[in-house]
Image: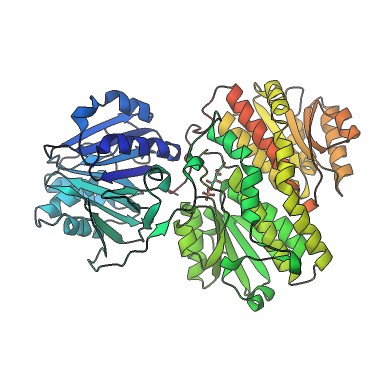
Length: 612
Ligand code: F6R
């Protein structure tokens, strides 16, 4: 949730790490800070609450913060309020050591009490500050900063992505990870450390993903990775496969709008190279499962959070429909703490855009501890979930910066539909069905593009509901999870309370809410349960509810009932969510924008939720 950027090289570190921080601001953003070791080898510290612009305001003229080595951090408060004192970097008593930390130190109170007893003085209320003091404690015993950090981290229980600099060692950054991402960027005579490649991709695409319990010592021209036990580890250098344009807004006002507009391409990237028209099926090489293993599969347990959980619910509809393999979907936070029954011949599929969500990761580990194979559907290459899964599929959506997930959702659904066809074709689906499905999927990007062309109309509709205080989203079958997703999009960025329901459930309670002020956004495609949804809408209309319908072209019945209709092209039942969610994303976006809210960085939210 928080973000780390560090630099060591021959350039001035300050503008590099500040720019990097801005790229990370989307992850968590209640305060920020930087520490620089200046040309006189003095540690300089600047911290401020609020956005990074506030930090920039307190920075002295560039020349005064000149140094070739520095660390920066954006914070999303866990322990202690978002004040400048609680912002990172944190320093030791001597003020010579500075650390930035992502994660949670679970035994910080015990460690803090011991350090206080030894005379250490604490400035902040954070758990992180103990690490600075612990390192100082061990630095008194050794001249080797890496060893001091190793010893300190051995005492820490919890999770960390951490980076350390010291006035006494102005030629190195030490960084380490356990359960929170830490990446080393390799430049020419310069290195970067970061928790997220977006921060450094304008400088280098060559990276090393640290593993848990690894620590790296980086100087201007070298690096060495060891374990916390000081055993040398061989590094694997990876190449980032997405482009700098992914992290620029371009002509768009917000990342969210850009990412919605990118969906014709991102959906195509999710199925590119994975269709096998000759055999009327699909191919997902990364599953690491043989045909025999896939054929005997009897159950899939999907585990995820938030929008990824909604994608999982759609996966249930599609996979069960096409392959008849039973699918259960559960919130990761629930799965991990109960005692789930996982029958034989089950695989667990974890879905996570970031690949770092703490609950999803814990659920993955719980399933593996029970000897169950776990497949990961992730976006971020090299993320912890991608690495720890036994197999999986990358969705290749490119960097998703807007906090509200949009393109990752449609890419997740695309990948789940590929899996459904693969499993279905191994069972009873005919080649004719497989071919038809593949052809229809290939046409989806163009159909999404068509819907995006209704953007101006959707903004006008958004005008009509922007002052609402509540909204209801209705859908049935495969569009029921889309209703949930539409409601989540609206509430998280516009702060309007919204609920998603299967349309027929409305009369079991929510109908009491309907009056002339209640927008009811309904997904009404022409499918087998069309008539049933129309009846549900009649019930809304009879109570003066304001209906906004997502329907297929030429639907005159809906246009009679609804105040506004957004038309979407027809497609196969299982692929409908890839189309019906687009107007809902745009509607939520425009409502939030018309309310002048910070669309890309909604209050209280962070892009990747690495705490429980
Ligand atoms: C909502 C949203 C969140 C995430 C959830 C899981 O727009 O983005 O609900 O879907 O925090 O995140 P990942 O997919 O990274 O595990």
